[in-house]
Length: 198
Length: 306
Image (tube, rainbow over all chains, first blue to last red; front, side, top):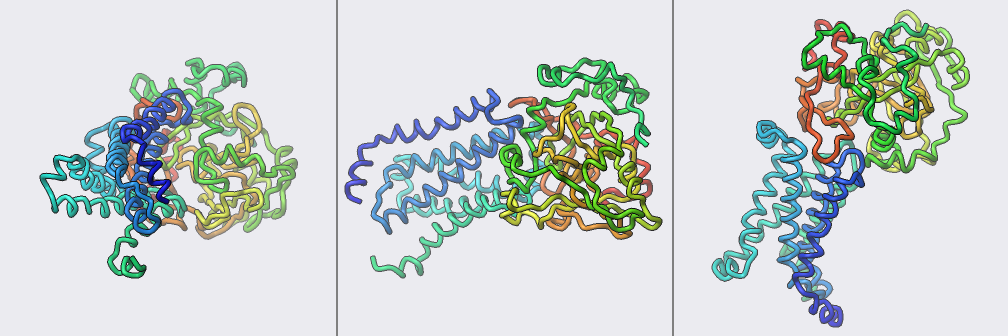
């Protein structure tokens, strides 16, 4: 594990950002070119949303991976978290500008449709996290920073719930995300942490 | 008896299959006569203008963007996996309150029916839409073939359920087999057809080969695919989506811009094929077939009987 940790230590953070935003542009281009199929708006909306959920799972996995396996991805966590917020924003923008299009409709949807209310709540919870994901904020907020960033947990739950609630019929994929997120949150419970020798 | 319903199309209006493939823009002349019998409807209004511009979606749109959950819940899954479904031989069991119950082979049915073209709007409950050039025959004719008994009030339909050829049925997304139903007067309405083809070709499997229902004024899921059984009953039949979530999917499921799906608005829709910047369009009452079918629901509260 030490060797893996040493190897990934040389990966520059900017490379993570670069590789991370690449799919956003690629997907948009595919939407324009027809590669996302006959209904590119929904496809783009879903792809951005799913990428955000995947990155959410990865950020939540950073701490348990270090504790349980000794794999240290801590230096990438901010980049992964900000990329997650970036994809949540892309997802939201596609919904606002390309999908629903009408402002009146958007406001009505946020109030009337529980899965959208919950999705918006996840976005709102993530806003302060994104805004304080910088060294200056960490210094200024000190101990409070850690408490603030526990908002990741409800944001992740809401994000997964948003997906579970929007599908038709009984579908497996959203439940997998929900399961992973619940598992990663459960690993943080004090009772669970006490179960294994340090 | 075919051709009970006039669609104002002459043989000259039938667009060759190649033209469907090669051009997205179909001549305004065909669009105007696009099988809707609305030529006399309020000329000059915005609605009439929409009617005149009604043009079929591309073969690509219709055959690659499908909901057929027996093959998976992704829109591309049916096109990817439905090829393995055996559609020959095929027969439809017609039973219940009919004079001549039994197994009707596809050959038997095709021999007795007269095929005709119908260009219909298709509105999915998910708020997207297409225009599809179907070939088929009126369901009423098939019902007559079996002979509807006095006392029959509904028709129940069932889709093929064959797990070995249907990977999506490994998951209980719905309570298989897929089930749908119509009131008898809806089933006998001249707009209600059993489709066997699109664009002048046999139905691709992903579109419900070899025989599917098309009820153009209802949400797409009512137009059940790959039918193996029809039962005439005096009781409202169970339908799959209603069984899965009665609060979201009613028995009638008529297209109605004024009655929202609990999770999204039904006031607007997006035509498939418009690309990344396609605009939403207003959804029409009964999907634009109000003149033809509104009488079926006279006196009913459509917000309750959704």
